[in-house]
Image (cartoon, rainbow over all chains, first blue to last red; front, side, top):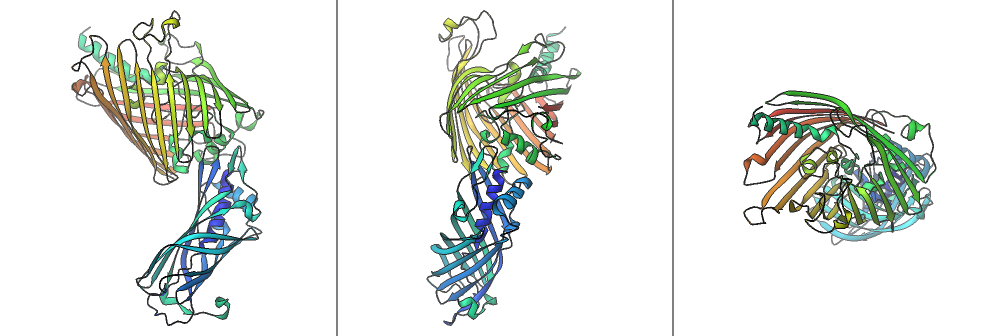
Length: 213
Length: 393
């Protein structure tokens, strides 16, 4: 087993957290007070784990984040999902160990993140809006275990393009994932996760009952 | 024989001597591109090179080698198993050199180094040593002699701090396997010159930065050396250099390392100070840039030091490397040595390209070709090339 596997696991967590970003889209759509939902156009998740001793930096990256966020005036909430098999740490064996032994992606194929409503200063659907260092809370489900998380996010809406970046930290052991160790290197329990996504506010639709939930 | 010919022959010999009797500890600073900013992930030695950890062997297979099978990276290709407290390694280097300058063309093929290395771990204490046969061409007097290039005790006070004492190459700047680069050879820290010294060192290896402080007590190669006078400047029976070195490096993001090293030391001939920055920049997991600049200020002892007699100069090394395919690395490098800025004759510059190939764990083939100009010899460039065959146990 490798430290890289551990890193991979961390990455998965990070992906899950990607869903946190409730950046709603729809700069061109005037917010009329009704709830709108916007789907993620593209999203990626990165994680940075540290192997000790020696402070090895394990960087994982993956694309394929999907999800929807709901915009209700100035608040945004959302649900996001990331396929854990999409993580890549740059080392084949590390990827294999991470997915097979620690994240068990065959059994737990995706990670989900449900973000609680975040209050912005203006509707994210309006062009020209931006937010910095907002705190968000959510629930991440990873490796079959749900656990609350908290992080920070930034958002900008330029014309109809909504761009969001979120960061948070995960504790591997919170998710019943064995702390990865490999040949004397042990991955630190805390993993830093960052999520980047874009959405098109022009694609905003009235929120369905399911989304409103 | 004319004086001119002798001078040219001297520089020709100097240019190849470095690899005639050299030793290598084979560090891989370019692993920073994969997030390995500290040497101790893969090596027992805090300054890198030498015997590998189990994790290092695994990475040599997974990251460095083009092909591998499971367990191939282990000692004896997986046929031998050692207890957890014992690490065994060793290196065999064979070199083909080619030098073509204004005086003649020289080619040599010879064993450069054949060493066994062992490391014993007793809780937090490591005892490390090598034993091998001195390499070199048939003309090297010590060729074939038994020799231990390095031996030291290393105690890890914690996961981040250590103390080390023993005989090994003084840590300074970027530790890279090519000991003939100007930042090693021209600063007299070239392993080929048997300059491993007796050192006492302490250091910190953290997530954000590393630092080390090394007391260099020198090392005499003269059996009659009088150690009682060792700490008396200018009263030694051998002309060994002693000094103090400090290294600091900051780990930026997860694939950059920015360092600064300084050294102050003296021998019977001179007192010198060397300091400068070094950079290891992993732009991507395939593209990396290594750079080191060292400024030297040297005060000759004879005649009495004056402002006029001091020598100011520098050496620089820059390499841009790209992994074209797993295990296949190409690079271009530029080197400049100008150790007395008042004398153009001390200027040496070199531009070259190389290929470093790791077909399987335990095997390395590296070739480098340079155009080299030594101002004291000629204004024209000469060819200087070598091919290295390396097997590690």
